Image 1 (tube, rainbow, N blue to C red):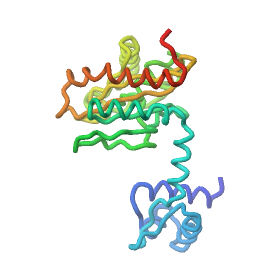
Image 2 (cartoon, helix red, strand yellow):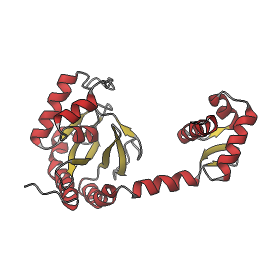
Image 3 (cartoon, one colour):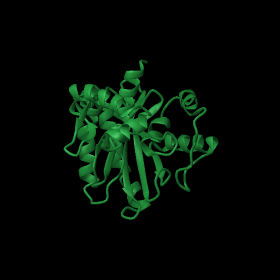
Length: 248
């Protein structure tokens, strides 16, 4: 990869976190102020960055256009979205859609909760494989050998006191999820947030993604969350049906 391209891509990642001044960008790249300015001038010309009135830079319209085009190309998103909205209407809670991309589970759609307390997740973010409901909803329903290959060498980082960091225990948890038809995240990724998820299958019976329902423990207790499972599975099954899946 050319140095110029690598620096431009690094800038995109840096300003995606929050708007940045030219000095911050130059320091982050470890280049002279004038070098960073030349890069930003070219990127601004093609709308990849936008200069704010206070002379900070943020992502430009070209990035958003490309992102939306990429998301629209994922048929699963357009198929599942109406069922996610219905699930959100029925429960008033946050609904996510995740897919497996190059060994990572990525959020490709989200319907926000109707309450004031909302999840910090965002479309395009990566969901940790071992501790998020949407990822576990995919892993649990994969062929065991494919799952083992994905998890092999993964760092099972402890994110909360309830995170499963033992591989054998995680495998057992995923097998249990497969048997009961849905996966759980019991405050394993974020303290105070628990969720349930269900897989979406394609016409070949392969897991294509998963829908998850996330709620704060302060508002929704375990019994109520598990009471949402039939509606969750119904949404996932309807999306699966649209992809050609049949339970038989």
